[in-house]
Picture 1 (cartoon, rainbow over the protein chains, first blue to last red):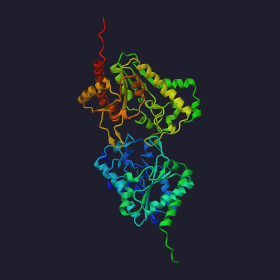
Picture 2: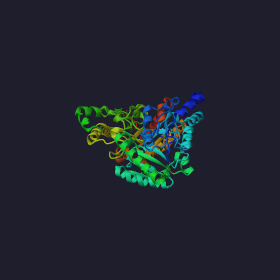
Picture 3: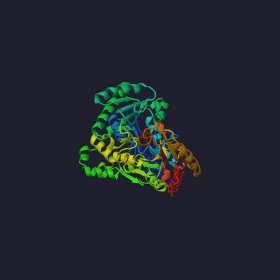
Picture 4: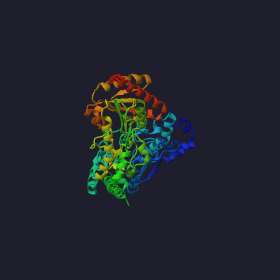
Length: 267
Length: 267
């Protein structure tokens, strides 16, 4: 991008863009969970002019985990669990990637160039980190404190390179834990009942994949954690959205009661 | 697509769409070459409503080999060589794929679904073959008769999955021939002079790739043949377009004179 143009942004403008980039829900709720939706947003901050892309691209799975903003709000409300939701597109900056990774600011969408990401200069990169990385990092650090487990909520595209993915909800994990085991078992049972195909480390295997969010805030802190991956067309249809939401609510409520039963309250 | 809707197309409409899908240039020229540009087009016939895609997608490398319509016309004119140019997008039907291949009617663009290609019914497939396959097949069969060598002209995107392709023009071949050897040698020399990076079976290796056009009309007929692959951003800039065109003109003229010298004409 045009470094000198961006350099004209003053501190107040940068602070406003940073504040608009992340949302905290039910942050004081007494829940064992923190929900994280770092790919929920499709917005590119205005000074970046959609990174030079036609607007249609910002609605695709390259730019946003389709349906995850709505699903995370719903789960947060029904489970009374705190959530951190990012508003900026992963094309602007992908929080779930280490800063040096090629798709931290993805230069192409399967070969379609992203003009604003071909060669961002140092000013541009610094600004994006201030606006779309630091506020998310801070929000997660604060909200994760004292929680038992982290759930990062994602969606995936149904067909890739002509291959139809025969998964409805995937549970992605990297290190085993009682939490992961319990979710896999409980979701397996409730998913089967709901007619949903549940998969273990599919359609991606986190043990083979590069991420940042849960490496940093989960594994490195000794917190059990997993990525949920929901097939995005299930979230575009109100009926299957409802089915997926209810199934996940039941499962995470059941797991919480099983692993972290609330002590009886003295009256 | 809507089979019954498409079934309403009458024979005259189908014939008109088929006729509009392919163009023959300098078809009677006395040249050893036939140029083929089966991926030159970005048009989806109107009854298919852009396959349900936003129009922007039809300008991407997924839909069309960017710059190849212009390059093929230029080469045809300057070399006085016949050319067959297809006008319909490879998303509608990819002539350079066997009919059973997954991307004969590509269902997704790197995960972005192509609504009209998710589950085309039998009527739809039959109509597309009548409109976008049979006329191209016939045009190539007719135009290839008596030619010494086939050149299929393609372009590729400069960056794929974050990897910048350090190739300007690739020569893709599957079976060795004096023609391939001569083009590689001559283009290597002229390319170096022009500052163009010439590659041998890059950015794709035809020996590892699935194609149809030159398997059918070249190799199976015992005709020497190759795919040219030009980096598409070179064709979007008038200066580099000129450089690439002139280099290729010189090279193919030189190769023709070397391999198929014209007999002296009795006067």
